[in-house]
Each structure stands twice: as C-alpha cells, then as structure tokens.
Image (cartoon, rainbow, N blue to C red):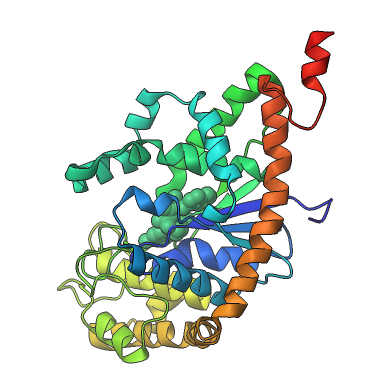
Amino acid sequence: MVVDKKILYSGIQPTGIMTIGNYIGAVSNWAKMQDEYNCIFGLADLHAITVRQDPIEYRKRATSFFAQILACGLNVEKSIVYFQSHVHQHTELQWILNCYAYVGEMQRMTQFKDKSAKHEENINMGLLDYPVLMAADILLYRADLVPVGIDQKQHIEITRDIACRFNSIYGDTFTVPDGYFPTLGAKINGLQTPTAKMGKSDADPDNAVSIIDEPDVIMRKFRKAVTDCDRKVKFDLSEKPGISNLLTIMSALTGTPICELENDFANADYKTFKEAVGSVVVESFKPVRENYARYISDKSHLQQIASLGAERASYEAEKTLTKVKRRIGLVDKARRTIVAVEK
Ligand code: TYM
C-alpha cells in the first residue's frame, strides 16, 4: 500500500441481486475513490451465511457478485479485491472483539431486530454477532474511511465504539474509522415501495433493479414504477416518494441537480418521465453489463484476481492481528515471549 495515502475499506454481501441502490449508495463511490485512497474491498461471503444459502447456488452467486463489483470499475492493480472467507484473520479478530462487545448493544441493532423478525425460525448467533464481524473487517485494515449507504450507519458507529473501547484499555491500537455517506443516493428506495429501501432480496422482482438487468427488463420495471396521482415531476419526499426516488436515481447517475431535472420535466407526463429515467439507467449500466460479461466468461482470470487479492489482504490483516494479540497478552508464536516470561 502507498505510505502517504489514507486507507478505505468497504464490502458487500453476495445475497439476492446487486441493485442500482448498492451501486449508487456505495459501489460507484468505491470506484471513484481508488486514486485518492489505498482501497480494500471485501466480498462479505461470511456475513451472508447468517441466512441459509443453498451451497451450489451460493457459490455461483458469490462468483457473480465478485465479477459484478469488478465490472463496476474496480482496478485490481490499485485496489485489493478479495473474498472475506479467504482471509482467516477476519474471524480470528472477530472472536477477540467479541470479548469487547456487549450482548445488549448487539440486541439493540436495527438490522438484528429486522432480520430476527424476518427469519424467526433461524435467529442464529451469527445474526447477533454480525456487526462484530463487520467491525473486524474494517479494523483489520486500519481503515480511515468506510463508504456505505445510510443503512450501515449504526454498524459504523458500533465499530467506532468497539475500537475506542479497545484503545482505551490497551492504548492506541485501532484506527477509528469514519463512515462516508453520499449526499445524494445514500438510500435508494424500491420502485414498488418507494418509502422503503430497495433491497437485494425483495420478494417482488419489480421492486429492485439489478445492475446487470437487460435493457428491456430495466425499461419494464421503470414503466411500472409506483408514482402518485398528482402528475407533477417534483421532489417531495413525504407527498411524492415515488417521483422523488426516480429524481434521485436520475440525478445520481447523470450528475444533473434535481432542481434542473424538475425544470426539464416540468411539462412531461409521468410515462415520459419514467421512460426517461429507465433510459438513463440502461445507458449508465451499459459498460457495467459489458464488463460483467467479460469477467464472468473467464473464471480462471477471476480465480487469479481472487487469489492475489486474498494474499495481499491477508498480509495487511496479519499485521493488525499480531499487534492486537500482543496488546492483550497472548503468547507470541514468533517472538520468544515464553522464554521472556521464565526470566
Ligand atoms: P449490503 O451488502 O447490504 O450492501 C452493500 C452496500 O450497499 C449499500 N446499500 C444501499 N445504498 C443506497 N440505497 C440502497 N437501497 C442500498 N442498499 C444497500 C449498503 O449501505 C452497503 O454500503 N454489512 C454490509 C456489508 C459489509 C461491509 C463490511 C460494509 C460487510 N463488511 C465492512 C462496509 C465495511 C452489508 O450488508 O451491505
């Protein structure tokens, strides 16, 4: 890693489909920040097993997600891109951090409450411990900045709390990271339920748009997007959540301010506006679709990228883990600490 650059870490779980919400809220910023920061991006495949996965499907989906994040413009010459499960230090640090995280604070996490309500039959320990694994992901790489959507804010806060708690006991060990939330698009909502986040695993396939959906599918989903009966293209979150969400998507992808878009579509009907947003999405993701087709058709290249990423990530992770183990008084394998104790 380049010495005078700050470190950026982020990750994504390979569940459901990778949506335009994931792209606008997080992944597009990953690609943009690669020159300014030392970047490390993890495919959080251990996080995703808190929900039951079919092994064959899961392997396919994780590979596809890996190809999709690369297709969004990650440059493996500059950034470290890897599968979380290839770097054993994540779970090792998670165990240590578990001893500095409290059950009560984990039970209060919104995502834990939501997921336990959704998967009543499988409220496993992993679901409760999920934020500690995420803290381990971030803290292992001494990240200064973590670009995420707004739904991850609580997880960043708990990461900071755990890091500060540990540092206050053992002295400066972890870098306390800052979250980075985009000013526009930190929460893209569903096309059918515009008051709630566009989720990766939405039951209604028309609610979410995948970054690799075919153009005709994208257009169909946008034509069906829920709006209101007012017929005015205007940003108003409480009265017009559907139109506001579409304006946000269009503005985030084109860089045109929302007020300008309101003017451009002042005389347009909703059908014209929805088709225009659909066309912007089709065009914006054309290079991603093309890159993806290239990556996914060459599995041995993907394997090489993953192996190199894991090796580089593991090297960085081990530095932090060794330091943490020394701080808490574990006997060092490499240094002669047993001999030192005898003396
Ligand atoms: P995940 O996989 O749910 O989502 C990946 C990223 O996409 C953002 N996001 C959204 N942004 C805007 N609008 C939406 N509708 C939307 N949906 C999702 C998320 O905020 C996230 O930034 N726990 C994480 C993965 C993770 C991670 C990490 C992230 C594991 N370890 C370490 C950062 C650092 C998650 O489930 O994201």
